[in-house]
Amino acid sequence: MSRSRVTHEEIEAARERIADVVHRTPLDTSRTFAELSGAASVGLKLENVQRTGSFKIRGAYNTMAQLSSAEREAGVIASSAGNHAQGVALAGDLLDIETTIVVPEVTPAAKIEATRGYGAEVVVEGDIYERSYEFALERAEETGETFVHPFDDEAIVAGQGTIGLELLEQYSEIDTVLVAIGGGGLISGIGTVLKAAERDVRVIGVQPEGAAHAKPSLEAGEIRQLSNIDTVAEGIADTRMLETTFEIAREVVDDVVSVSDREIAAAVTLLAERAKTVAESAGAAPLAAALSDEVDLEGEHVGIVISGGNVNLTDHAELTRTGLHELERYADARLALEGWPTAVSDVVETVAAEGAELDVLERARRTSVDHPNRTPVTIGLEGSGPEHLEGVLESLSELEGVSVVERTAPNVDRG
Image 1 (tube, rainbow, N blue to C red):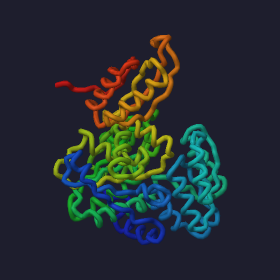
Image 2: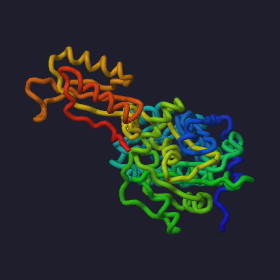
Image 3: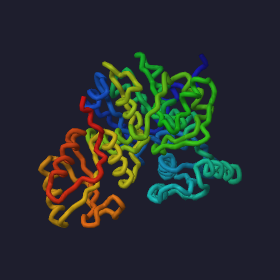
Image 4: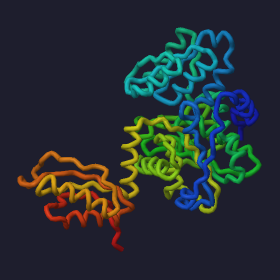
């Protein structure tokens, strides 16, 4: 087996280099997730509370702190639609290096403003990320700026690997770690540290089903590129690994599993509800794998890296609603009301009496299924489970002046 391109010593050096800049993020143990996954214990490594809201500052600062005086003077350029942009921008601000971030047209305005807030110049170029990436490389050739790659760089990998050092110190009994894979920089760094540890630690990568390039690449022994991607987890929506990360991953990754977007949404929801932490989709993917049937964690001490929490509130609300559907704790229904608005009061009181939450109640646009002398209304209900929600809808259907026209309550297994 060939030597990993990044050594444990280089990661130790990276930790010293970034020590005064990054947070030593907490490890939050969760009895709930241990019970749900069958693990002996679960520790959540909360990189979502890192500076800039993700782990990316670790690798960005480690890379940029090693630039020569001439390279610092020329400035740096990077391409990113999110977390890497903010990591490079903050590192540039701290090191007094001018930074330019190239983002695709689809980048949310909030992320652009956050990047500018760290002092970077933001250039909007290209309809998708690959176009922004190509533009940034071309500009670097023309201007002499240093291109800071989001993952395919040994200094980037070493910086991300500092998370592995912290994991071993905070959670010495760890048996398995679950880490999201996009380009592979994060898992390459963490895996390098854990595979050098005295105890045998299993390293499992997690990808969304709509961007699952790593497993076929590692199984084939060569990089496989996806022709398209389709996932809500934009932070790990890469089409491929590149040479540096692929070669390291071949040595340090034991397995890769895939999770659905709906499973990711459920994990986002559970992190908010049970761990009181906000995670973006990519950050929640490892927990989704832990709670799925894809990984056997029975009796193990499991580390789960929550890699980022940069998500706007509207998207987070939509994700949690989808998550509640996936957890069978949310139902939508269409009602027909006689005697508006008295019937509305009856609906509200009945839902409350049944111990459910009325998330949505609004007049609906009339369709062919609606009686002309009734008011169509749509409601959204949150409850403790499918049996509970089914009972609430049954109670509503028994009200005078209220008919349940359509329902999408979770399926109830009557046995």
